[in-house]
Length: 119
Image (tube, rainbow, N blue to C red; front, side, top):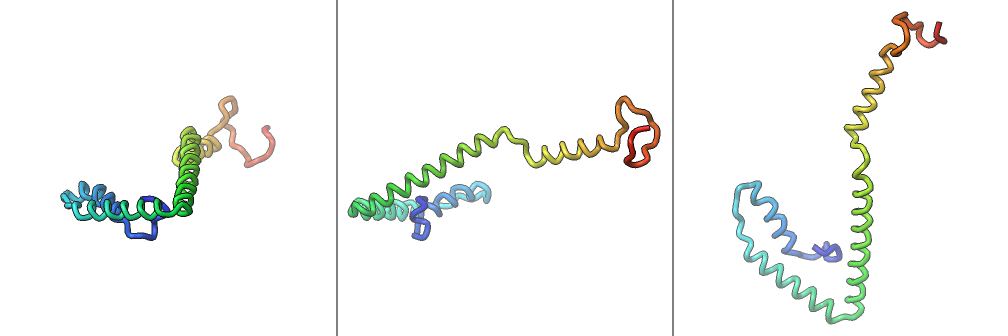
């Protein structure tokens, strides 16, 4: 669904939702009427945009802006692919905290008095 038509009736969005939900529901939902309505809406939008040079320029600019934002998100997602997940960070923190209670590898088993310099 074009973002600049978000407030308009857009049967194509209903078709997309039905296609996604029908398999989960185990139902075959006929969408013929919605598809016909979708084609009619797209035809009307195309006619209106083509009839106005100003509207055509606005729609083209909106689509360029959307493409730029989508590309930025794609790049951020690709850059974040190498970052650890929250679960991985949490596990690393737990592992680190667990080592704080363990005696040093080269130390003694003497009790620590809680923070003073080593004896």
